[in-house]
Every structure is written in structure tokens, then in C-alpha cells.
Length: 398
Image (cartoon, rainbow, N blue to C red; front, side, top):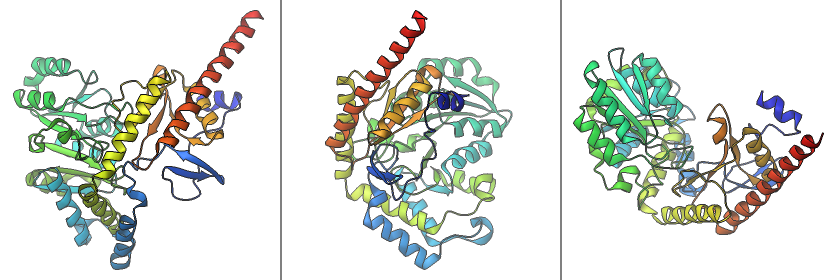
């Protein structure tokens, strides 16, 4: 329906655009250079020579593919090295990597819970979390976004009806750019005898003074969280997902998580790239400093221009709410035509009234790029509203 309506208004489909080469803070599409705000590469590791060299060396040593499941065909040393580094990062006993971040959530939740169990998740949690509960056939309930009172009240009322209870929230929410209340979540899960799983996919490399993640942002011991989940495709410039936690959990998942057991192992080159990027996160803190400065610049400029950036706290993710899917698509096209690449997020991914453009900020952007994007965004949104108002006025006159 949206595609038909957009076509009727002369709007192009904004998705599946083909980039001519690698996409960083700038990209080229159809031989046109653009400022790019549609890539996750928060710390610029996708263009880091050390990360690229690590991937190339892994191909030379191990080949392009692991070629089969690790369970039946064995693994490469690089897999274990990456999992050890991820476990150490979150101060956990072990970790397990999957070839997909989505699969990491689905397979882990499906393996842990069953029909006599309950999962409570934030209403804005990622699709993969919801799908995991559906696969587990457990009871699933959403609590209002970041409403710790509602979560606690729900557990007070129904905790006794279930064997195991899992609370799931995101560290940094990918649509809105705000942060979970980690200290409150820990306090509630301890008091109500539940497990807590934190999806830190967008928090790693972004939150906290040195980008360690949401636990560093709050100064919380990461061992107080039962299950850490994350992805390798955001800050770590690779692909895949991981779970970090106690060895008993990791050992269980190695035999019970379908998304791991029945899937090919992560390509060695991807594991090598992620491992190198994780090491650089600790050794090059200036990248995090630049990211935070750029994120603040974007949010402050957007608010000064009168743009609605919703709940964003100024940590790498900034929505600009348009209130209409068609308006979001039209605004994305207008910006594209003027040299800025940013994608619309539309219904049904989010409610229609919250349709938006979503900007990903990188440490490698500069203030000139950010200021130019905000200036164009405010200008084109104003023109778009005037065009719609004029069209409505003409229709009323008829």
C-alpha cells in the first residue's frame, strides 16, 4: 500500500539502494557522492587498515568459509579467541558466537524457555527478542517502554505462576536512541527471582566514557547481568551475534541452540575482523571521544533547528520524527537528491505517527557534514510541510 501511494506521488523506493563501493561517512550511489548516515559503523573500524588486514590474513590462513557447523566439523582458533575476548569484555566466564545477531536472540531465548516459563520484554525491544519467545512457546508480555514500575507490578502479580522468568531489554534502543534503566532492571530481577538478558548490540562501543557498553554508562558490575547479548555488525565492523554468560549457559547453548548447532560457523575472516576491532576499542579511546562529540553536535543542532528527535539521548542514534510514513519517504528522497543518504523508518516497523528518518552518527563524521545535513533537513522539511499545506488549501477551495 505504501509503495503504491509513494509511486502515485512520484517517490522512489528508498530501500535496497546499491552502493558503488564501501560505505562510510560518505558513499557513492549511482555514481553520486553522498554524506552517509545509514551505516552502523560507529567507530569507523570498517575502514581501519588493521581490521581489514586481519580479515585478509584470516582468509589466507583459513579460507573464505568455515564450511560447516562447528559442532560436527570443528572450528578454527580465531573463533575461540574472539569468544574469549567477548567474555572478558563483559567479565563473564564464556561466550558463544552466532552467524547472525537476529539468530543469536531467537536461538538463545528458544533454547532457554518453554511453555511453563515467562518472558517480559520492553515494548520497544527488537523483533528478534519477540521471535525468540514465539519459538520458545513461553508466555510473553511486553511492559511499557522503560517503565520499571509497570515491570515490577507485573512480576508482583504473576511471578508465582511460572517456573522461569526472563526479563529482556536493550542497552541502547536502535529506533529511539535512548537507554534502558539498567540499575533498576538488576534490582527488580534480583528481588523477583528472574533472569536478566541485556541486548547490548548498539551499546557496545558507544555507551560509557570509553565505549564499553551500557554497564560502563551506569558504573554497574556486568557480572550482575545473567545474559549479555550483542552483535558484531555495529561497532565491531563484522557480522554475527554473541551471547556472554556463565560457562554452564554457554555449554548448554552449544548443544541446544538451533541457530548455532544447525548453522555454519562464522567465517574466519569475520571473526578476525571483530576480534581486532574489539582490541582497538580498548587501545584507541579517541574514537569514542570523537563519536560522543559528533553525537552531541547532531542532537544540539537538530533541537536548535526545531526538529523532533524524540527520546534520543545523543549517543550515536538520532531519529527525526516526521509523523507520516509518506512524509518520511519524501523527505529521505529530497535529502538524497541534495547529497545526504538517510533511510526512512516507516509503518509497520513502527506506529504510523512515529514514522521517522533514522541517523547513525560515526566517530568519522565531521562537524561540517553534520551541520550541512541538519541545515538541509530543516529546510526540506519546512518546504515539504508548505507544499502539503498548499495542496490541502487548494483541495478545500475545490
